[in-house]
Length: 394
Image (cartoon, rainbow, N blue to C red; front, side, top):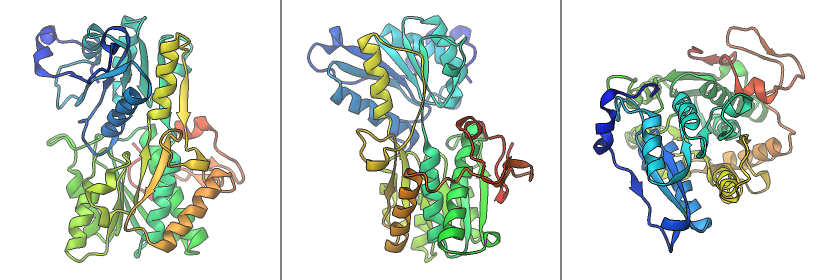
């Protein structure tokens, strides 16, 4: 994505707007400006809005900071515009640190980091920092949403009347496979260990749309995919995409009399779109990670790091300290909520470890032998979906 700069790129600056936040006091002259590149719109009720609101919190909590940002950084909304080109403009406006919030920006962020060695870069979801030959000014940050999606899968299975769960996935890569697999493992645990039902009676179907959100004419329409799920007898749809179509469709079906619910993704406020149809939402909180890196840059003690931050188990929904949370929704029953609380406790104290053997890949080859636990690297680079999951692995 965004690998080359077209000859006419210099004329494209008028085609997009860089938004400047209000700057208190003398921050405009002596403070710290950071730039944010978002793959989707800043108000998507999902992935990009979670990043945007974290940036606004940084402005409130770290004196002298200001955020400048560009949203809709994707080939459909900004055809021909490259990440290095956008970075050049942010740097010209004073950005000393730049965050690229999509895996798709990996090549462009790496190139920009090499072109601007005095500027610090954070790439979300990548792992360049693990490579000793990567630029010293490039770090990686990601949340351990695997836990959040385990909770989503658990809540889905506890709430399903049919034992049929749909997973609305974006594109296929290692990240999306491990998150879909995490949902499945959480659902299977609830189904077999809590509800004491046969694993063979649980259906978990994954449908990929082809990108993080709908691009007409390019991706599958997530609204139609969600409708197809519900029309096929699935009664709970878990979303892994950046936007809330699954929840909106569930709400429409509910109004028509169907006993269906959904779980959105990414953003703390996602259930607000249709609260009565929402079981809850696993969400990213980027404030702790952003704070870590921005303070390091301000103090001039930056170092190249790869951070994969999880929940603060003792206070999971405290957005000052926990990078992953789960907010229960109105549609989650009291019994399911109580079971979910016990499940979260087990995840936190390691008495429940779902990436443990025996586990097979979708092609029935061995992933983990009996009593073997997956390493971070094995989870991060998950090559296939797991046995028991329906859907494509590549």
